[in-house]
Length: 383
Length: 219
Image 1 (spheres, each protein chain N blue to C red):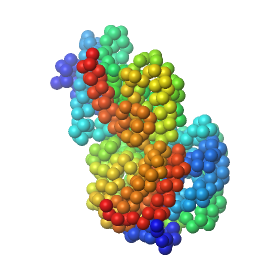
Image 2: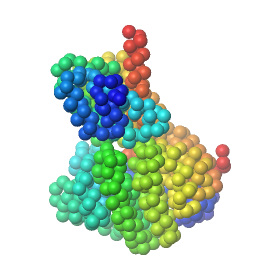
Image 3: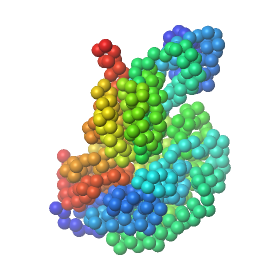
Image 4: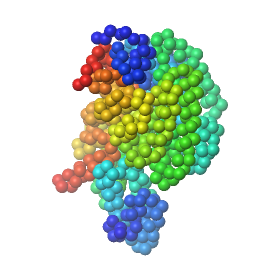
């Protein structure tokens, strides 16, 4: 058992300072699809009623003993994608899908070749708001904008105080996709790959502007919230998809700019990296400042090997796999959590989390085993 | 030089991922009387080179996609001619689907393209496919393989349900079930009752090839 001597915030802060807290901080990317399922509320009801979704998230937090920090305060309803300017169509249960379906994203070629010029001219935010949004919204754009506004108000006025009353706060001032990932989603994987190989100058025309935009948005959000963390998501650049020369040319320099800009303000960048980054890992030690970033891995990268390679340079966050959440047994979950705490957290700098986000069909006994093992296992012995 | 010597430049166009050039050469060869089956075999030989480079770590998913796209466009051009000639040997047949509740298609379609490039016939049922539709397709085309692609853990149950329906319908005996997608693991394969699991499209192709070879040797 663990004698808790820190608040949730202190525990997370210690891990982010590469120190060893009283126990491992637990921060799952807890999505409302999971909350609704654990509360026996259909996704259709939850996605059409963000207030109900918020109440479900609180109920799970209370019934399962809680965790140490949040990704965001408001529920991640389909309109969150519009709020985050993601170039995807979000299909909501009960609205676009059957009532009991999981939230889905539909990726299509919504950015055309001609749009590269517009993005370079307008920057990403203006391009999204003035050109792209209308291609993504079916129906009344004004109503969609109003939903985004209502969601923002709910997050600020209702959700944030409820979470604060429970002693937990968001870790991130902002969460966005890397410009490379944004373009890949908007162009679609194959078309963007063709751009990278046959029209690289187009991609390179927009990446600097998109990076500047993103740094400005991150900086504004950090200033407004006082939160010293941002999350940068990337799922498409690893050596699973591309050779290292693509990573080096189209991703690495812009990532250095973003991480350096944040680090100069004392802000830590969490790199949410899905797919297998094993072959890319040496780059991080060579090019990013020590302690400036967290690698948030999705279980396809071997987190134990990553720790070996970047021990003392990076912090880590991960990585209970979705399959274990949804079809595993509680004893499997507990054993894996202990292995993580021992293997990755033995000398601090580790946040216990899940691979990508909580599985919508995470079994209640597995979610409980994840949290209870994280809270109770002192461990931290290097295997 | 062309890979099989039948269509000068086509092999190289595939290896350079140049779809426009490949289609132009294939059309020209057709006009000059080349057999469509020879042209498609030329493309497949080039795809084999791409696959070998992928296996050796020289190429990545990107190159598989780009070469696959070239082959797809050439195949679109040649398909009517192949059908008219009644030619086009198949190494085996696959029914492929992303099942009910999941609309992700990219990985599935990449796998379909690569499998076709390897000489298999693929019946791609699309996304959000009901288990009953898979069973009906299996009854209809009597495939060697069924493949389920998924990016959501919620599809594990649907994969399992579909595998059980195939079993109950007496269709499972000679049928190999493959599952693939970023969230699948060996434990999911066991849970579903599938024969093979992968996150790597080329590994799936290799499994089908190996099984087809074994089946041919056993005949």
